Length: 400
Figure 1 (cartoon, helix red, strand yellow):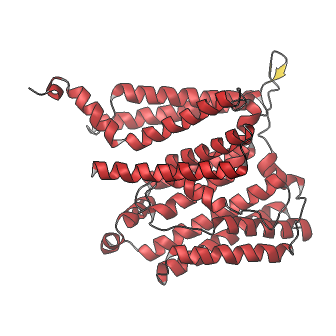
Figure 2 (tube, helix red, strand yellow; figure 1 turned 120 degrees about the horizontal axis):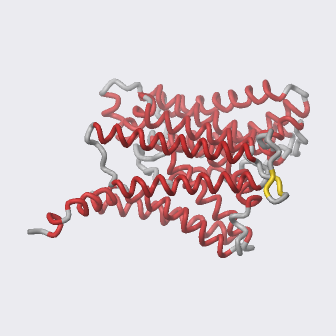
Figure 3 (cartoon, helix red, strand yellow; figure 1 turned 45 degrees about the vertical axis):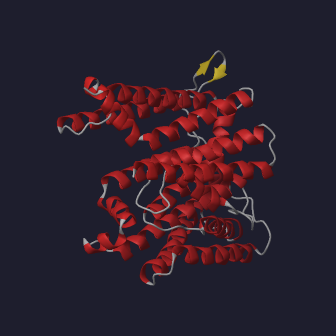
C-alpha cells in the first residue's frame, strides 16, 4: 500500500500547496525581504515614520498597478502610464496654480482626461488591432512631449494647501488619546481593528460557504494560520500608523481602490470576462463577449488610474515637473509580474499586484536607507523581476 494511502490528509495538503505555490511564495518573499531589511537597516524599516513613508512613496505605483493588472490579464500592456500621469499632473498644475480653478472640479477633470487618454489608446488597440505595445509606446512619447509643452519646460507650483492634503494629509483623530505621554491616534487603531475583523469574518463566511458546497480545498490549519497572520499584520500595521500621525489620506484612497478592484475581478461579469478574454480571445468572442468594448473599457480604467496617480504624485511633490512620471511604467509593470500576472494574459490577482508593488517599494526604501546607489538599485530590481518571471515560467512548465 502506498504511503499517501495511509495519509490522505497529507496528500490533500501537498496537492493544495502545489496548486497555490505561487501565492504563498509571494507572501513569504515579501515577509523575508521585510525581515532582511529590518535587520540590515538596524531596525529603521519598521519605524512608524518610515512605514508611513513607504505608503506615501508607493501609493501611486499601487494605484496604477491595479489598472495595469487588468490590462495585462486582458493580454495587453500599457507603456504610457508614467507619461500620462506626468501629463495629467502638469495639466492639474496649470488649472490649479495658473488658472486658479477650484481643486475638486479640476481634479475630477484631470481624472476624466486620464480616462479619455486611456480610452483613445484602447480604441486603436481594440478596433484597429494595433498592438498595445506600439500604441502605448507612441502614447509614452506623445504625453512626455505634451507635459513639457504644457509646463513650458519649467516646474509649476506650489499647489493649493487643500490639494496637498491628498498626499500629505492624515485622517483627523477626534479622541486626543496618548500612551506614556506620547500621542496615539486611537481612530487609526480602531479602524485597523474594524478592518481586520471584517476581513477575517469575510474569510470565515466564504470558508463556510465552500464547506457547505463541498468546495473547500484549503486545509483547516493553513486557513487558520493564514487568518492569524492577516490579523497580526493588519493590527501591527495599524499600531505603527497610530504611533505616528495616523492614517494618511492616500492610504484610505488606495485601500478603497484595492477593495473595489478585488470585488471587480472576483465577483463581477466584467472581471470574469477580462480573464476569459486574456485566456483565449477567440473563444471569448465566440461565446458572445464583445472583446473590443472590453479592451476599450480596460484601457480607459487604466488611464483614469494613471490620472489619479499623477494627481497624488504632484500633490506629494507640491510641484509639477516636466520629468514627473519618468520610469513609473517600469515599476508598475514589474509589480504586476512579480505579483504573479502571466505574460501571456488570463492570470493575475489584485492582492498579488499589491504585494508585488510593496516588494518593489520595500526594496527601494531599504536599499536607500542602506546607502546603496541608484545604479545598483536598478540592477537589483531588474534581477528580481527577471527571477520572478523565470520562476513563473519554470513553475508552469513543471506543472504542465
